[in-house]
Length: 496
View 1: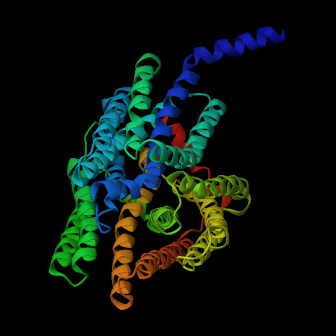
View 2 (view 1 turned 90 degrees about the horizontal axis):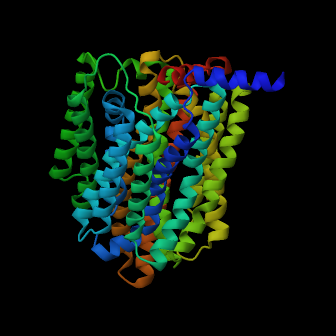
View 3 (view 1 turned 90 degrees about the vertical axis):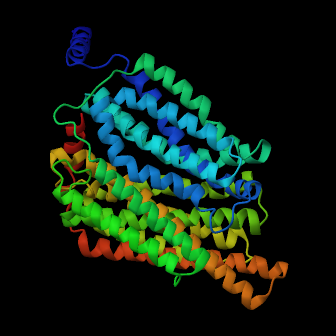
């Protein structure tokens, strides 16, 4: 009888359309996700070596990160639409191969312009690849329990991949060359693409297939102009006409984007997604978190290698407690969320993160990692880990089925855009603080080290203000109860 029941369940599963190769498909999708996640952290460790090799200035070094995050965040929503309409498998493969080609271009970069362009291309192809992978996951796993397991694997890759990237970046930079931090993507992407051709099944969305090209161009060009304006401030000063020109142009482009979205029949970003207070609060908190968090990686990397004299590999290991802390705290937040709701957990997280960032302002050229950096990044990781899970859930509260995909993608988009703006703004602030310090303390080696650290700590102070602001907006805007947090299931069902 038991065997008959098992066979009947298997028959029902296949009758319901379950893909017999779905677990192999999960492996292919996980490899692609790992590559995208790795790329964010692996390049951080390689930045000082790349900057020295290509003669990149301190004002321009942020483009190594910003070019990627801007393109990724700016095109992510459009990339999801293209994958849905053209075919998820097809765009998944195109994203993989494009990412490999962009990585090859970056690894072979002969100057800073070539490296920045390749990072932008990586971001653009990542914006095609990431939503296609997520959509393939939802349509491949039709059983609710199996889908939950698949998303668990996907989430674990997203959480743990950053730690792997930090170590891999250190090993490749120290024992080969910083260029291999980009070249390593090529074999991974090609193998995943070949496997995808054989294993994945094609799927498309039905209905209207109109693209909001004006919205995509206006939003991305506005963000690029805004970031470039921040860079000009670092070079020419905040009062320079050049700086004002770019910042005003960015404002015009971004306001035009909002007007286009309001009037568009098929907007890239429906304004109704942002106007509900809980979702709006979550997206605003995500944006500010990106601003505050991304700068930490940039400046601590330079502190480790430039001030403390760490090798690239040792720098990677120095960041490991951060990755571990985020994973631990995210698990805790998942268990607390059904009981307490998102607001108290997020407020506790932002309070811890703000305090930790202020703690980092106490570093000097002579302080030790174990006393001044390690405790701070553990507290910061625990705080941000408490934020990420409730933030993602809150972003889907009360969302209409037709907007579930956009709302899901917006969490990633706002964080990436926040990271782009934050990296550019904080790098400009740090560079200005460093220059002012040198003017008043002279050009001696000790003064140069002190100036660099003064720039870092000034940026950390500003980061703490952004994280504090995120906590304030969380307290004022997010009122959701635990009972309202069932919107994610509806969104997943819609995507499937």
